[in-house]
Length: 476
Image (cartoon, rainbow, N blue to C red; front, side, top):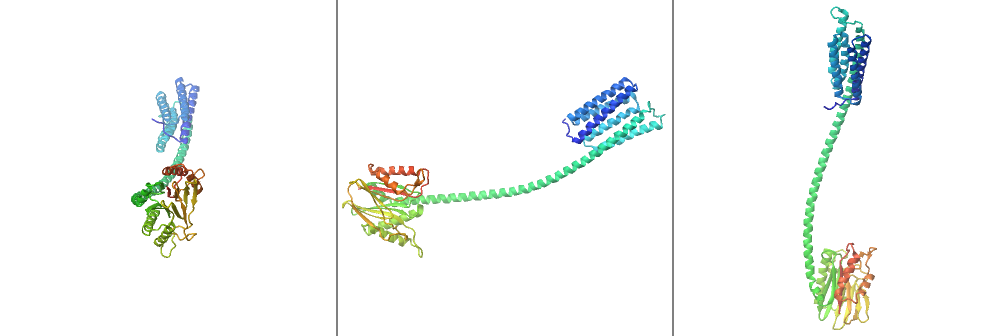
C-alpha cells in the first residue's frame, strides 16, 4: 500500500501529536517512578514514550498513512494493557493522548466528521468518569484521588489542542476547496477555449482538405491540358520538319552542314533551299519570337519564298527580300495597328555555272571563306527587317562576288552569338563567333556542325538557352 499524499499542515499535526503523546508517556513514567509504582508501569510508560519519539522521527522523514497507523496501534495496545493491568481511572488519561493521536491520524484521511464525533464521545466519557469519581467516591473508587487534578488538566490541554487542530484543518480545507474550485473554473475556461480552438482547427483542416482537393483537380486539369498541348506541339514539329524536309535533302546532297537547336520543341528559325535553272537559293530566317508563334511565321515565310522563287522566278536576293517584306506586311498587318512581327533573314543565290554568288541580308550577315586568299570576309546585311515597320533603312542592299571551288559560306541566326555563358556569364558575341569560324578552315565542312555544337554547349554550361539557334555552312 502506497503512503497517502498529505499536506504540510497535516504532517505537522501528525508530528506534534506524536511528540505530545511521547511527552505524556515520559511524564507518566517519571511520575510512576517517584510515586513508587511497580517497575513494570515505569518500563511500560518508558517504552511507550520511546516508540512515540521514533514515530515522530519517521513522521518527518516518511510522512504517510503507515506511520499514522503504527502510532495508532501502539497507543491502542498500550491503553488496553494499562486498563487491564491496573483498572485505575486515572490511567484513562492516556486515552486522551490516544484520542489526540487518533484524531490527527483520522484527519489525515480527510474525515473531520468522525474526528468531531470521537472527540465528543471520548471526552464526554472521561468527564463523566471524573465527575462521578468526585461526587460518588463510594461507587467509583479511585486509588489515588489526587491524580484527578492531573487528569483534568491534561484533558483541558488536549481538548484545546483538538479544537485548534480542527479549526486549522477546517480553514485549510476551505482554502483548498476554494483553490480547487478556481482551478476547476480555470480548467473549464481552458476546456472551452480548447473546444473553440479544436472547432477552428477542424474548420481550417476541412478548408485545407477542400483546397487540396481543388488543387489536385486543377493539377489534373492542367496536366491534361499540358499533355494535349504537348501532343499538339509535337505534331506541329513533325509538320514543320516535313515542310522543310525538301530543303534539308538538297543540303544533304552538297558539301554542307545545318546546326539546328530549337529553344522549344518547334523553332522560329528556318532554312529554305531551292534549286532552279542551275541556281541554288538558300534563305535562312529568324522569325519574331520562338516556339509556336515563331514556327507559324516560318510556315508563312516558307510559303511566300516558294511562290516568289518558283512562280516569279526571281534571281535577285534583293528582289526576293523586297517581295517577301511586302507580302509579310500585307498578311500580318492589323487594321489601325503598326506591324511589329516579321523576321530577320539572309538570302544567298549561288550560280555554280557562272561562278557568281549574290547575297542580300535583312539585318543578318554572311561569312564568306575565300579558298584562294585563305581569308574570311564578313558581308553585313541591311538594317531593315522583313515585315516589320520599325526599320532604319528603306531598301535592301545586294552584294555580288565571284566564287571558285572550295569557297565556303556561313549563314546564322543570332541565337548562337547572343547566348549567355562562360565564366563571366556574358554573351558569346559575334566577334568570338567569327574567330571560331576562322579556326574551322582546316576541318571538313561536313564535320563542322559537331565542333560548333560542342563549343556552344561548353559555353552555355548549365545556363538556360535563350533563343533558337541555327547555323548553316555550305562549300561550292
